[in-house]
Image 1 (tube, helix red, strand yellow):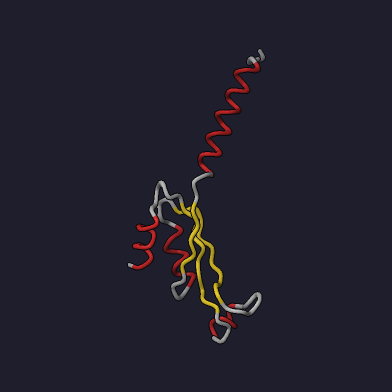
Image 2: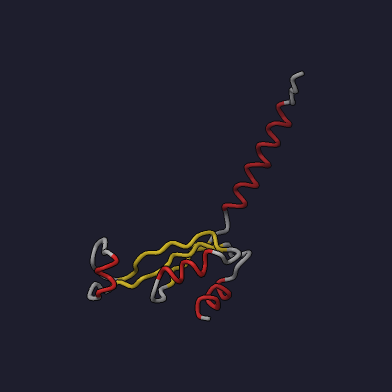
Length: 102
């Protein structure tokens, strides 16, 4: 037995599914925080409800594509930083900063 659904039901289902996916991907904010060791900051935020991602990197400085060794040695002007993407409906920027500064 083969189930055949009318086209308007299939289309309606596809539209609703698309809206759900779009809604879950939308409403993201991004901030960059520098706090010494980026691995510690990154790991602290990866488990926070509302955080979608935390990526380590460098901010500031003039050296193109600096290595970890160059930055930690000093003189490049770079700081270890973490780019945090979060959902502001779940986690406010103020709460994010509170967690960072605690």
